[in-house]
Structure formats: structure tokens, C-alpha cells
Amino acid sequence: MMREAVSLMGGYGITEDCPGFLGHKWMDAQLEATYEGPEAVQRRQLSITMADDLFLAQFRDWIREMRRIANDRPGTGACALATAMQMWLWTLQHLFKAPDANGEKLYQGARQGVTFPLADALCWLLASRSQILDVLELESKGGADPAMAEALPGLVSFYTDLCHVQAARAAGEVGRVCAGLVHGYNRHPAWDTEGCTTCYQSDDLEAMESLIPGIASVARGYADVIESDGSHPDKAGPCVRFDGLDQFARLRVRLDGCLTGSGLAHDRAGEALTKVMIPEALDYPA
Image (cartoon, rainbow, N blue to C red; front, side, top):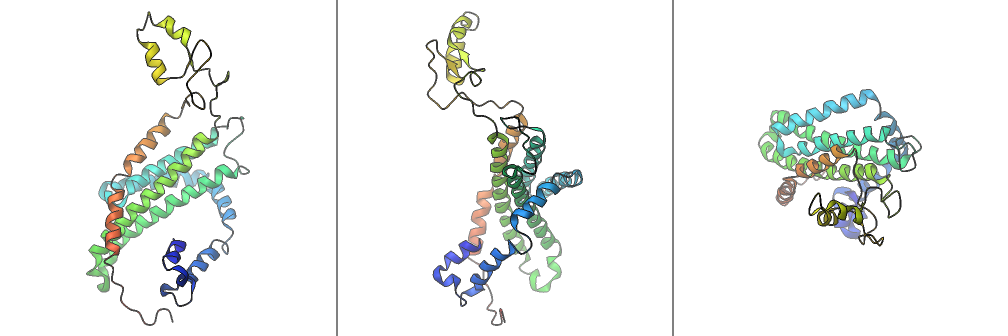
């Protein structure tokens, strides 16, 4: 986001005279990724901690918390976030026990192509959760500040839309990461002996026609069929099977549905930004 902010200002964005001191903030953002420990080290720590039973129990409580908020405040995007959190948890538990195509364990310390993306996905989730909780805190206690009381309804509405937008983006990232981990380490079927174990043979289909009329035409339309001369559909390989992944597939469909309304929230937030008035602060920063 800092890079986008700087680019909006062009070359002016990296000078000391740029409003908002974007150049300084841009550099600070890069430094913060290192001085508290390189990001790779932090991912390594997360990949160990997030597998702990105590954290997972707390994470389940957070899912229930988001469900409750979604019931009362659906406009926050908590529904999409809760479903994404559930998908992340399912994926983690799946990776604990699932091997790759070569029989090797997936979730292990040395396999950072698995653990690091899952740690990144967790960060998307927790950041969005914190944002939603902050907005609820603002709504609950902001009225006590005289300087904020008058503008509070508009602020809450604007930040609620931002929550919805960010929750949708976080859910999309989590869905992408989880799908890549769940499916990406399986062998893609090919037109060989192993890959064709679930294919129909055309001769068998013709023999079954007397018992189930029309099965041959249906199978050719919806399944992999090898003809008597060895020919087959023109594609990379037989259709991928999803044995044991029914729940994950249902979560994916549900997650897509939970994004309902996020585009409208994005448009409302964008329109609100065009109406923001920032008072001049001559002493900022000193």
C-alpha cells in the first residue's frame, strides 16, 4: 500500500517535501520488516506456534466470535472471515496427516514451501479480525470523545465498509493459498496406467448399454473414456479426483458465497474517500 501511495505522487512521492512524508514512511515500512527479526524468521516462529494445541483451541474460539459478530453486524465481512478461518484450520489439519505424491510428510519444519504460505495466510486472517474488533470498539466507545461524537456514525459506516473489503481480500488470499496446498502436492493424473485406473473403457460401456441405456453417451460427456483404439479426450490428462476432500470443496463454495456484498462495500468506501476533509495541521510533523 505504501508503494501505491508513493506511485500516486510520482517522483514527488520520494522527496522530503511530499505531503504526508510518504518517502519516510515507505522506508520505515521496509525497515519494520527486518529490525524486529527478518520476516523469514518470524514465519518460522509462526509455523511452530500455530500448530500448538493451545493456539488451535483459541483459534476455534475466534471463529465462533466472528460468527457471532456476523450475526449482529453482517456488513463487517465477519462472515467471510469466519469461513476463511475455518478453511485455514481444515487445511492445517489436513496437512498434518496428508503426504505428497511421493509419500513425504507435508507439514514439517524443513518444508517451508508449505509452512510459510500457511503462516502468511494466518496473518491475513488475524489482521482482518483485529480491524473488525477495532471498529466495534470505536462504535462502542467513540461517542465518549466530544471531538468525535458528531462524526461517529459516518466514521463507523466508512470503517465498516473497509472491514468488509479487507475481509473479502483476506478470504481470497486464504482460499488461494489453501487450495494450492491441498491440491498442489498431489500428482496430476496422466494417460498412463496409474492415471487411467478410474477411466472407462469404451468396450465396457458398450456392454453396459443393454443394462443401462444411454450410459455410453453420458460417460463420454462427463467422464474419461478410452476408446478401443486407445484414443482419449484431447486434454492434459484424466480428470482430477477429489477423494476425501468433499468438506474442503464445500468450504470453497461457501467462501465464494460469503463474498456477497464486498464489491458494494468497496464502492461505498471509495465514494466516501472522495468526501473526506482533512483539517490543515501546520505543526505536523514538527
